[in-house]
Length: 565
Image (cartoon, rainbow, N blue to C red; front, side):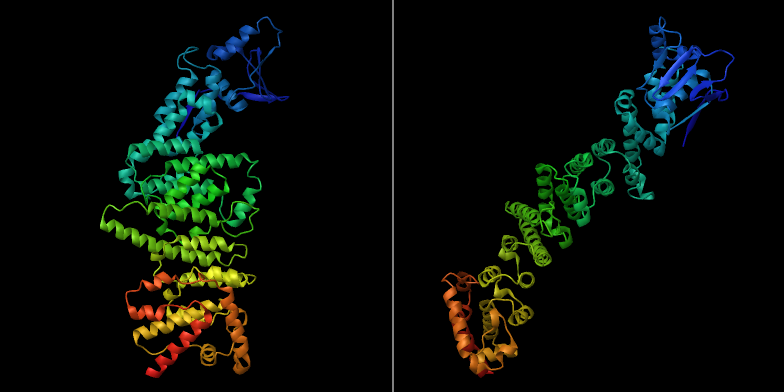
């Protein structure tokens, strides 16, 4: 760190009875109070260098002999004043980036300028600042940090602006050579700065057009994680308790605005993960709706890059018992779908859009599996997100089936109608053999869904001309005897021990299912079945409307295929 020494005399200031004075054969004739500190000094040499003291003495010439000059607002307090006083006496003082700002502001306050005397303290400080401080990276940053205590005066003196320009110029000038140093060698250093100074530096860097968007985003990430609150569950709760009353929250909202305004506009310049973290913080801080909308728009443009963990956004309200903020994810998904509605400019762009939609469908299904275990998640919200994804984007429904299974197990209180409503988001034709095998044994699924799964598996086998798939023993017993009724829409081997005694139970159960189902209660769209190109497939897959008829057709199909083999 560079320093400058002024003056040659030894330090002769001393303290007696809480009063600071200077050793001299001449009696003191000037009394000054700076905040809580008292000084007894000499009019000469102070008045020759300080126009403010000249004016005060002129005003007090007719006052009492021991009148005291009050300087309660002097920047830098007693320490800065004493440095200025020592300069007047010719006592050696040492100046560096650590104390130049308060001493400079005090000298300006005392009017120690060229109007009072040539080569006065203010001029010497300005020269040292230009020739030494601004030429050294760390000295400039330390000085810039110091200006936060005296913002108006530092702006007036040009200290702040010159520091900002020096820092930005150093970053831009050394950018071509940054390969020899860490790529973000400057990002950590400037992350110590306040938001106003940081924002001004980053705006200057961006306007130069030299530093890449990637490095700018890296720097913004470092700064954001240093100053923005933690978005973990505990962090949310601890911060929300004082959100409305804390000036810190207001400061952080302003910081959020500045960070988002500095983000490059090009798609992909900031990672989707970073944008989602910013959105989490914006929700926590109750940031402006326009800022949150802007973040959702940016995320929607590149949602396919996100991970499931990125989407796990805690709720921004302590009154919300849910584990995750599903509404925000729904809003982001809607932004993605809206942007996908714009007409493509070329076939490759259309293919890219289709790939993105498929990746997002996979992402959303994984997200649904994560949130499905939340006991406080309303079923309607899970259904809404699942149905928002275009059906064409899901080549299979295995992940969606897992989400449904998790939700049903986490919410055993759901009645039969609610379970049926949830299962309508599934297309049994899109389940893999592994998923079908699991569904056939799944005791939480409605009976109609289980039967449909078996029906489509048999239809698939018939169409392929292959062997009949090996069904679970309990299912074969049900098909062979029509005897056992699964308890509460489930499948229980224990209930199949006496099939002959359960025939009436099965009949009553299936009739109950028929009575509860209206004519439009299809878990698989019938028009989708009739659009199949193959007449053979249409014949096999045209699903009867009631579980009893489904089992009858399935039993006939099973016997036919078994006979052929």
